[in-house]
Length: 380
Ligand SMILES: [Cu+2]
Image 1 (tube, rainbow, N blue to C red):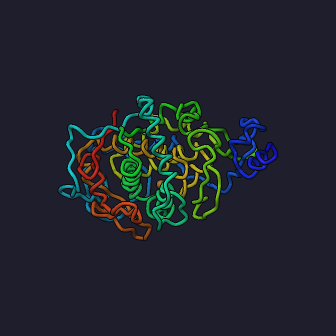
Image 2 (cartoon, helix red, strand yellow):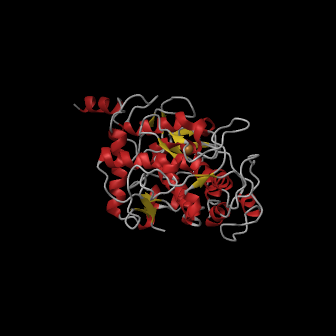
Image 3 (cartoon, rainbow, N blue to C red):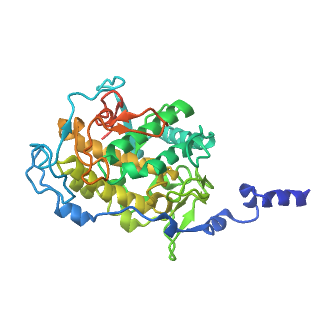
């Protein structure tokens, strides 16, 4: 009897093995080479700061940030030499009572019950089978990861970055609500409050997203074996490949330390959308990814770590704060939508796709978070 019990334990019931090996010891042994994950390209906070525009209201004549400029196009009074594409009204699919939108609540103000429900709904997506048609996916959650991996060339380091990721996070929210019964407020994560000590946030405890171990001295990440996602296997990534690997993290607090309110503000002081976007993307956004490390540090399949969504809720918050400073920032956009030379200017009619996860929409539909297609604001 005892013998067969032991045999069962050996064939894979990890929880049972805890009877003989202390889990705290066992989990430290599962390390993973970080080289396979790469990292997000960055600019320095000093660069962002020294080139920050003087905030003089919406018609700043301060120095423009030194990102590649689009040659030609109409002059715009508010954005220097960048072409600004506007539309008279965002064509919204739904309606939104601007006095009563959904409110995204910062994690520290988010109730214990909402926290639990939020984590269970993510777990629920992971436990559901894939809907099919998403390369490499083995769960409903991985359907979402697959979309990011496959869309990567179209959605990073160009103007599409912020609107596309806003659309993407809203799909994640929709699936949690429609397929996993989540009905609370959505959270967001004010990373500037945890800059330099992400690992101390209670986000990274076994009750929630699991621990945030440091990078080992020989450059390895640690598989996350405890918490809501303990033992999670990822099937999409690393990079553009498909290889089973563990959910791993490798925090570098010198990188998370740069995700300061100052850095965010320096980026948000740019009046041109695409200057702001470039600064945010290569600035706070990139440092948050690289700072958490391992799975989060790779561009294509980083949504494999569910903390990705908390991070992108933070990025979306910064975008919304920038938009709040000037009404025209929800009705206009500028910058390249592709990497052609010369590139194609993004327009409000640019189509955002999620490979069928949700119906396509347009940039114009997501620029205003209370425009009808979307209906939310942030608590601060
Ligand atoms: Cu992304």
